[in-house]
Image (cartoon, rainbow, N blue to C red; front, side, top):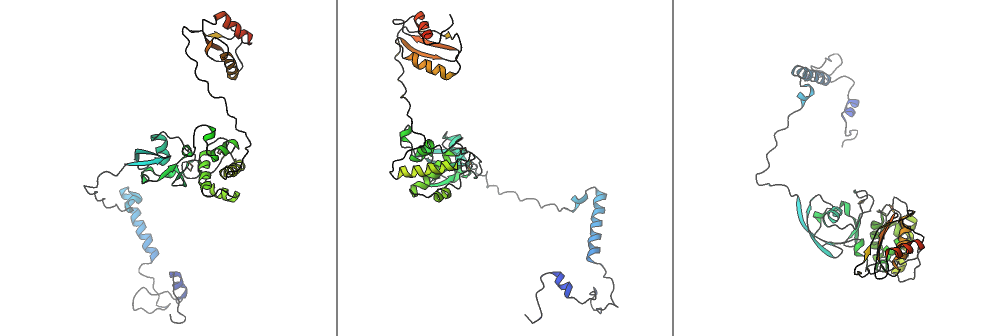
Length: 338
Ligand code: FES
Ligand code: FES
């Protein structure tokens, strides 16, 4: 570039450097103030006239500014063999070790397929837009948001794991350490976020059984708990990690295992059943539960059902009669109406 010359990026640069005389619009005319004439048509004139013209036509024809819009050329018809766009796809989903053959809408999320098509309610739906992590499941070991993953894109052998797939057996003893820790350490309140947090924690502890609090916060960054149970969630993950390392762990809430459910009583031949109304209705259904539990142990009682207002015992007529049943109830403090 020759010295003193510079690029002019904007016309205004040109205008600033131009001689003070206005340039002539007519070729060959001297460029001096004396000989300056008004150009035949300035840019301003042109715009004013063309707009006015358009407006006039618009007013006359009633089309207004619509008259200035150029009609789009007609769209070319799609080729005859293009066919209907694909709307469904058949996929095989492997969820918690079980294969499911299913036809999915191409717009359907994994969460929708699991819940609406397969009846697997193993993850929760919070925001439905990849913001809260409530729907987290693992795909090939990595946490993903089931609400934002299209089922139609799956089915190529990916392994999907949910909370139902990490327990090793039934009952509290069969829970995975992460599940047990969240439960017994109270790492939840409403529970909307819990399944997602359990799965993100599981993914972390599969790789790192000795995480720092920062590691846990990083791994759970995509999971939001609206109830704000973060302190307990952190403790839950640390306790689960300790259990997975083989350490002895005590939890804030000790595990209380309830009674084994009783085997149903053998049917009694000729059993009699009658509904009685309590002389004074019970205060709560829990009061009825306590009464039923005690009455069930009395000899000759074969079954029992009821509410806060009524009770329907079934008894063996070879052992009891109605008067004796009434007497038993009265002795227990729950007299019934005649
Ligand atoms: S429901 Fe999927 S991220 Fe919130
Ligand atoms: S326990 Fe309610 S959102 Fe986490």
